[in-house]
Image (tube, rainbow, N blue to C red; front, side):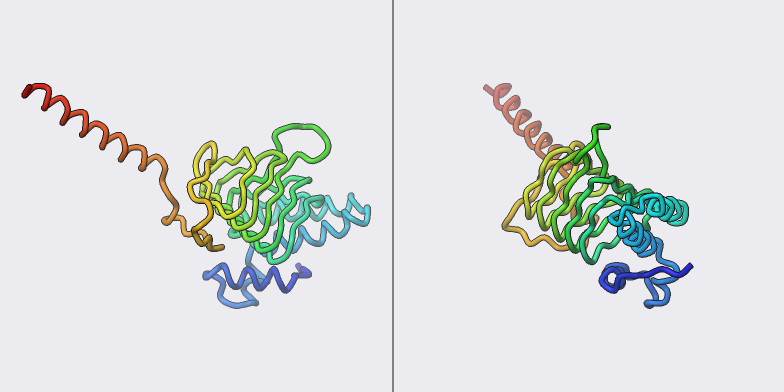
Amino acid sequence: MTLKVDPDDLAAAMEKDPAIIDENDALKYHPGLMAVSMYRESHELWLKGEKEKAREINLKAHQLTGCDIHPGATIGKRFFIDHATGVVIGETTEIGDDVMLYQGVTLGGVSTNKGKRHPTLGNHIVVGCNASVLGAITIGDNVRIGAGSVVLRDIPSDCTVVGVPGRIVKHKGVKVQCELEHNDLPDPEEDEIVMLKREIEELRKEIQELKKA
């Protein structure tokens, strides 16, 4: 299968996936790069009004890579999908430049109404595996969304978001890197457990002091 691959997408894949052997390996066997390249071809046809052909390519890409990117979605430069399996990107999704998605990500809608119903993502964004960004919301630039998060509201630039529903755990003042280090994400549940343990210890001390009195 001969694909027209955008050099910027290829460069992004080479930069962000250390498992790639060389360019030939990426061009022949990388499902994420394949899914993005087939999307770009289908998108061109969609804009020309050749929607039947666009949907045919969309279906083939889904069958071949496990990734479903609607031809109507708008995606910027240097877009990278790692593994591709299970990624779903809806029709009215808008994505900026230098965005990276891990497997299982959904950029979906929350209604069946026509018109804008999918998210808008800015530039330099990383979305962790199995995360969902739902509805006609806006995600600012330089945002990291943790694995398994569900984001339902607008997120300003320079944030890290984790949890269900997604909440901001870092905002400004912290350098946000494009690469998602899964083991470096804050754990809000662990923080709450630590806080509860501290409160229990303080209550125990108060009880001991009352017994002495």
